[in-house]
Image 1 (cartoon, helix red, strand yellow):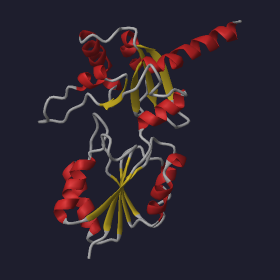
Image 2 (cartoon, one colour):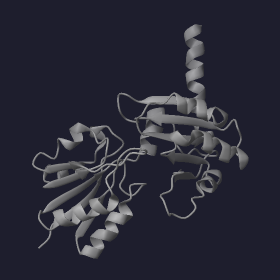
Image 3 (cartoon, one colour):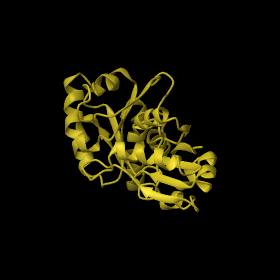
Image 4 (spheres, helix red, strand yellow):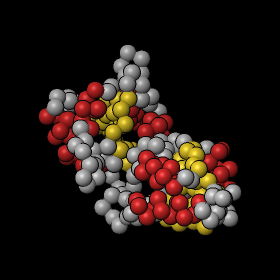
Length: 249
């Protein structure tokens, strides 16, 4: 007999954005392996679980993926309910595929519980739809980061093909992103917004254009951030300037 592994989305940060199903599973979990930056109040829902941090952050010591997968399998062979708690949505840049494959090979039952991804939280934070009739009818979620030994990642092609693009894990690559997109024909005045810690009280928002991107990135802190690019963001760029003019008047 083996238990069941749940790959659960913790959402963008705010604990009250966790789904009802995710909260219910956490309440009966025996073991929780969680990403970095999961909110303490979210972890507190796993009242009877053994809780282990196995998160990864760019440029810092990280838990090896093979170790995480093995820990999930070993835990499922000992306990009934095992949770792999991932930031955002498990199926977006969360390396869920590797864990799913390992569980399948081991014959372990699993279930995926979606979460609110950072792109949705950032759009909500800005009060801007990522799609807009007549302006934006396509959205791309991309990351410029590639692992060692992975095939070439032509992230820019997706950004150029979409009306709105959301770049994950890109704030630290702002110079490269600007250079590549400008070189491949993206207009320097294309609206961009960087949103750090979306959904949390310590949110940090910087608006500008593609030409400004490195300067905007230098104002960011160390929290997780997403970069939004596209004409649908024009309202987000314009409104703060209008508000400033009204305050002066």
